[in-house]
Length: 259
Length: 332
Ligand SMILES: Nc1ncnc2c1ncn2[C@@H]1O[C@H](COP(=O)(O)OP(=O)(O)OP(=O)(O)O)[C@@H](O)[C@H]1O
Ligand SMILES: [Mg+2]
Image 1 (cartoon, protein in one colour):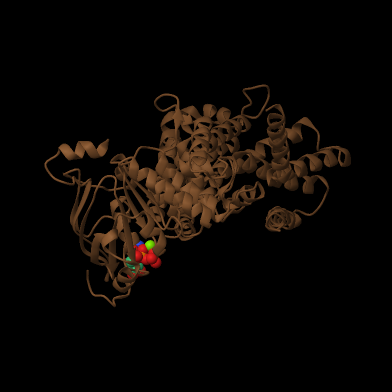
Image 2: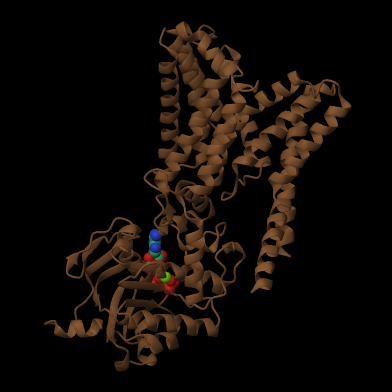
């Protein structure tokens, strides 16, 4: 349905997000260096690169966690100015962080809603709406086919359940962009399949998905396009169907300079 | 359907019971009750109205501040300046009222002082990344010194035109013969308990203590919350100072010295974890109660007051030992 709307447009592909010459340095470390690319609705982009290549830094800028040192972002052709994560969420950008960003001392539901708790009441007399948060979190876990229980403390959870909690955060709203930083790092084969299915479902809803992963097969099964970073620089950006695991490996290690 | 329902209800009740039995607060509470029962039989003077009145009132000053301290500890911080802040706030109140202003002005000045000091602590900790221990240790020294400067290191015991009102505020018993400070403490405890469980602010305190980095990533306003929590802590010290001034009827520059240790002890005995992420309002009150009962009972049993530190220190270690054992059992 989204696609037909685009077909009417003049351009072949209307990008939802466009990065122009984005750089980020932490002191002397140049983590991301002059990167430009765009994300299309209903497309899964695999973002690959060696440890320290700058993948997490890049998606954190898109999620409003870091501000770029230079460069600009355009969302649906409007300049995107973000100062904090909430700004990104308001623009429909959701992220699953690499370290999951969970508080062990809180329940699964509390973690899912962290930073955007549901409340009932009026004005200054609003209180946390535990019931709705438990309910909604339970629904999302069911939808994700996860055994996670909303009232359980994250402390006691398995790696897969923790991951489900982090992923569940992206299902609270109807986002336009979902960034997943190694969502399959700590989970079983069955759960990996579940996450990949979720990514496909998101894509079918017209959401732009960015998948960061070191697992070549995962990326090649779901990604429509692959971007490779090496030491902060973009060295490839091409259709998955026109590339191969061998080529991507070469690009990551530097055996192949550019593609 | 019915079986699963029963099962869940069963499970819920079990978890409720096991939660109670597993909570440090519960066992400390039992210890307080046991001590009180024992003392009622072992001494003639414990269960007298006068002694109970004294105990409950004495608990309050430590307990009120322990409520604020618990919030700070939940975020993984610490506030060592509370004793000195109590002194400074008492002194500001005393000096302002002594100068002829009425009680409202005195209290407003005192509370403003507390909030400014709390904000100062909080800003250094949250925005300049100073360790809480160091900042509040510095403030411990600064605030007491300022109290001496404010008063010229004298004792203030005349509080101007509203002298009687101040004494009534702290020393009276307006409700069913319960000492006023006890009422204030209960109200503050209810507010604290409510804030911790039902508000977003409370939720964020736990989130920051649990994983500050995660809280930042998910958009919790970590820095603002930290500033606010040190303001709350200083405020609790200020309120305790005002009430205590009314009760004592005099302010010296050494009141509240060493009090920070009692307050932290109360919070920790009540289950607050110095590593952050855990703590309750109820725990703070019960922890303070245990300390006061220990102090009181030593006197009644005729044990030399020099032993007080041993018993209170022992209580701290026992409470934490209990927590360790529970953690070890969970890990098995
Ligand atoms: N907050 C920070 N402060 C300083 N340096 C940082 C920070 N975050 C990242 N870096 C540096 O930036 C570079 C890129 O890091 P980044 O986390 O983006 O890599 P990555 O591609 O996600 O790696 P991995 O696959 O290991 O997750 C690294 O050299 C890292 O040390
Ligand atoms: Mg990374």
